[in-house]
Image 1 (tube, each protein chain N blue to C red):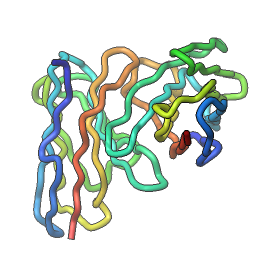
Image 2: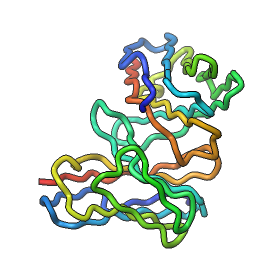
Image 3: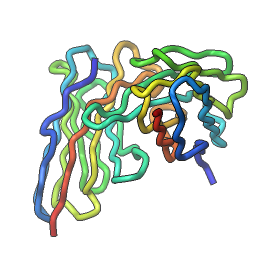
Length: 110
Length: 113
């Protein structure tokens, strides 16, 4: 089944404790993106990647890192999480115009 | 800069029509529409490329006026399954794919029986 998977789905952590949210797609898509969704703000793009080893900042990249060492995986790294990074995170992959979203990761930073 | 969607929310009875608008301050290459049901991921509905075309998806259609940098999503004879939050995503410049979308804040649509 064609899909985008994210892990973990839910995470509660404390300020400053490094974490990684994994994203994997099995559709051989070149483009992958990370978004955060907050009430009243919609979806805001954090980073995107057009291909392996090619990444670029979206609208809200501060406090986040990404890597794209292989086509299927695009992990999101929070080196020192802060409470303002509490949010719902979506990974997406695309080929052409349609983006396929993962199920989301709900992150709470205390 | 995020595109502006209007209205923020709309409540309809089943069978009524709705229009959701999306407006940008930038020159647009394309406009994408997504629907998100509560607790789920956004799902792609359609894309409109510059040229003023109109597209349809079942009873949901959309138009794109590139001169005004606006798009509208039309839902006719709404069904209960249409409930959710609708997002427009805009792509500026020369395009190149869905890697650089900027989404609006969303329009909440509630369909009542």
